[in-house]
Length: 192
Image (cartoon, one colour):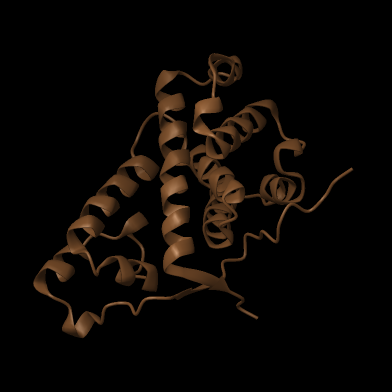
């Protein structure tokens, strides 16, 4: 029996900040420098403009984010997005779940996996590799100390190598942090 675990969607909502984003026209040189590189090399969002209040942290965060999510080699890009979605579902971050589900769907060209995850969570009917990645990422997000050797072995059993396991761990835990920033600094609002 399926149950909806939350109101997750791959339709990206608007994010409304609680803190006024910096104004690009009056930004300091350090803020402009930090904004030269953006997460995922996309537009400068209100979220990034809020983070730009601390330009050094933004600069470091952006480099770390891009390195973890877009580095060549290791875990595939869609599977890194899956780790981000799993963490975001556990942390109830509707905005991050939507953004990364949307990216996953665009990469794989199908919405079925994300629909199943949003409907059934860990019990989603997925092919073994995707299911193992999802279960590991959710378990890691729920309580990191509960991850055991058998959780790592379940990833190896579906073909992940050590580099892919590290990449999955990084993409998942990055979103433990990112979700908390999103929750603290603003909220998703409907596009309707």
